[in-house]
Image (cartoon, rainbow, N blue to C red; front, top):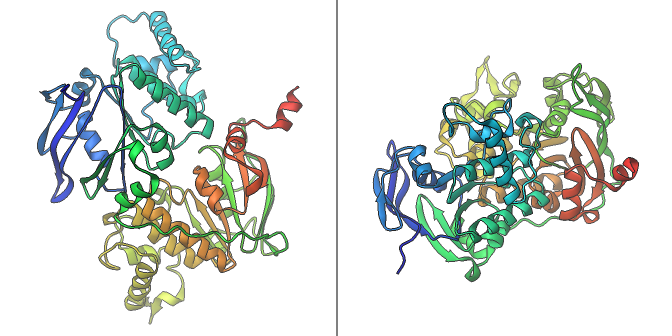
Length: 508
């Protein structure tokens, strides 16, 4: 029997007493797409970093076609034909496409024209339309993804590890990526595909490895399983999906009104251009689009962290355009930003301290001029229970929690502030199925309490599942506002890429 292309045998990895990988064994054949599934903290990234040479295993070995290999750094991995495309690109924005691709792989006097021709040949071979002389900073994120792939192919990669490769792509770009993967493995190469999107797994994978708590709990042929079985293996229990009660909200009172909002820096293209919309009481208003098209700036304007150059914002009929952030908290606005580490939590603080972080001035937390520790602790314990946060208790440091539990703690705090409006910017990004399900359940519960919700997400399944109306953003503008039944994946994908029938007609 032919030996596997690569095999990981009895790999274990520990971090200061924490088991990241325990006795992991699996293999991948030439011409195979292997999907790697698991919740956050399951050990997926760790095992791939061991294969790529970023980490050193504490036990076990790696074999290539039956022979043991020593992979101590990425250079060793690349010499064996292994390349890894990580979720966050490693491109230099000021350099051209060709410069990025040859960076570190050519030495001495460089025949730049020859390199450029080779890059173009590779791009054409796989049907990638890439301007080889353009700077990375000038390219859309979907094109940057292709540059990362060509960079791996330039190094003659035979095994491609792809970590959440469709996280920032439109549906059409995602489909093109799936087509590339199928074409690439048809040439005898192999792909390990890390994703949390079960539909993609079923579309592209030949075999699926499921990990839980640092161990392999499933090794299945894609043709012999389904999404339900995979989700059960990943989280160890049946997932009860929350049901959306769809109602018409146009007759309800307008809670948030945004009119003609524009944000621009002198001499630069506006990041927001004449944005107008309303959210009614009890409505979930979704904003879809590829990251970086003005969604974060719009949230920051409504929240008060960014000043608009023109336009007005009203909440429950009152103009809050020039109100401070503290004033907006007082009006009942809660905000879950896209980057909880940067903008929402202090990781060295306890969970209880983070729960009062934005309302420390509130008299409810003090007793005789001092913080009422018991009241704060009881409040945090209740939040831990209500939001199913896995934490030892209120005094646990935030940095000791998993990403999903940090996000649930943040959501618990902001739901407490959001008497009127809850702004959610990518609330489930990077989270596993169990955490996503909990957050979706919370969002729908808050809607039942007549709160208005602004939900920004790049996950179309999330947008379609939760939202009553959907706006699509492209380069700081709304491409339109639609009810859920007016859109499908193909139409919303075109809008996310800047295409609309009206725009094309205007060009003609």
